[in-house]
Structures are given as structure tokens and as C-alpha cells.
Length: 65
Image 1 (cartoon, one colour):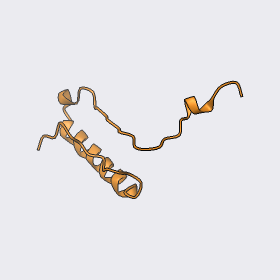
Image 2 (cartoon, helix red, strand yellow):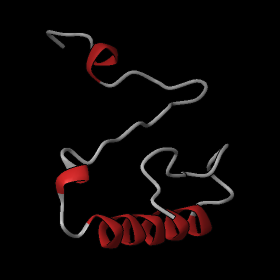
Image 3 (cartoon, one colour):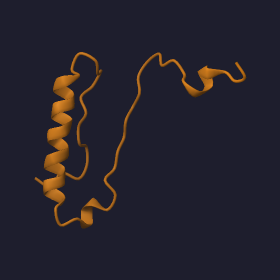
Image 4 (cartoon, helix red, strand yellow):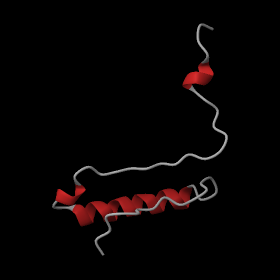
């Protein structure tokens, strides 16, 4: 093979952190609705993959409660 596939598809031994941002969400008229929908999605992912993930997905900033 011409190139090393491990460079493009590395084997993962450990953990991966996932960080996200909803750009300009502070200026959205539906900010609370967006946060509620995202929270429901994260709760579903946490429930469906609880045996596979090391820590639950959570919203850490931007809560307006």
C-alpha cells in the first residue's frame, strides 16, 4: 500500500473528549427551546450508550434556569 492507513485511521486506546458550541445561541429567540432539545438528545445518548461511555454528555454553560 502506498500510504500508512494508521495515520488516517488511528487506533484509539483511551478516552476522547467531545466539546461543542452552538454559535450565536445567546442571540437566538428560541434559545431555551434549543437548550431543552439538546438536553433531551444528550439524555437519550447517555441512556442508549451508558455501557460504552465513561462520562455522561452534559451541558456545562449557557443554562438559563
